[in-house]
Length: 189
Image (cartoon, rainbow, N blue to C red; front, side, top):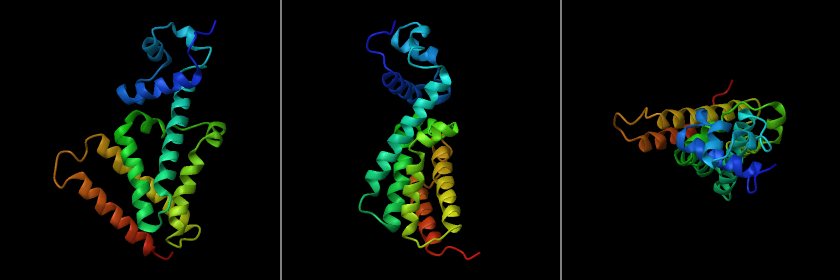
């Protein structure tokens, strides 16, 4: 019998909140059952297993990030768009560290195809159109931006920049200035 009020969407949302509180790696169906004060078996009407829950959280995080990115990019181009999208990733990671970690989960091909992941690539490519990059340079630049955004945010979340001056915001601003300059003067092969 399905417990009244429990839905897959509600469980995924609660799992995402739990991930932000305790870390994505600590999210399990058992932990979620404790949160709802129900037996683990009652959740299996909605979730196959912990991997299914984690995939749901990853899909939610990718969707939330894509929605925020699209809103931030509206009406922007060039450096303004670059900074806006970069700040969406950084702010989301600070606000939702567990969900941000979930967004990095390797998805099955089927789940990836159904995810908002392609929207992230499309947004990045839209920014790069303002820099007149053609293929394969555009793909190289997509990978560069993703690597820099994720690398910096991950190190910052882990406290990697909290031990010394200058402030991490100053470094972030300089990095984005540097990326803009690089994209405007992309080296020829």
